[in-house]
Amino acid sequence: MGVEGCTKFIKYLLFFCNFIFWLAGGVILGVALWLRHDKQISSLMELELDGTAPPSSFYVCVHILIAVGAVMMVVGFLGCYGAIQESQCLLGTFFVCLVILFACEVAAGIWGYMNRETVSQEMKKFYDSVYDNALLNDLQQEKKSAVAHAVKVFHETLNCCGKGLGTSLISQLLTDSCPKGVTTSCHTKIDELFSDKIYLIGIAALVVAVIMIFEMIFSMVLCCGIRNSPVY
Image (cartoon, rainbow, N blue to C red):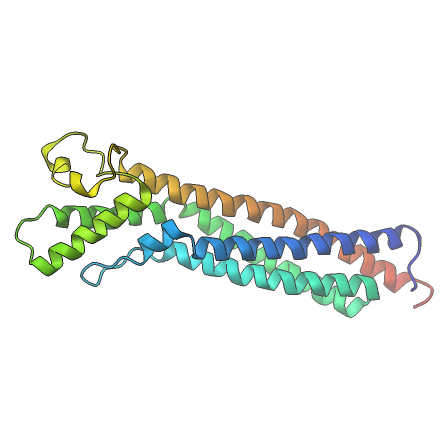
């Protein structure tokens, strides 16, 4: 093809970065699918009490990640093909797609940072509601069974017990639903569960953002090199 020298080096460097970008898209897609089907999270998200379900904001983020991972794989393939074929049209399209993805990622990152504690706070409120209902004595038998099941799912899934009320009388009323020998507060476990997942998402997003910046630079350099090549 037409490019030579440093531009040719940029061409293969862009191909390599796009291959990494394509792999990163696959990793994000895989991580998002893993988060979507994680047993701990699924067990909690599938609970429902009196028509009230756990907060869906975490799954909204996961579904966005699934879409982003799929789009990244398509865009990465487009970039690889455009670099090898030295196509200005494909490289220009690739650059525009990168700019849009980068803008979306920055916006999602800002929103995620501002709402980083929302998911765990909402889940703790849902747990508190279930826990408080379990302490009531005037519940119908059917509802009492549903509440007891919900509390047990929380305790067994997170390996925790209660809201951190220590050895008070109230916390002792639900001792039978707690794993044997476990005294860790469910509030603490909920924070750990969702904080770990959010940090994992943040690290992946940061790595992808850095790759995007280099790819935008390389694609423009290569596009200019192709335009100025004597062959064209």
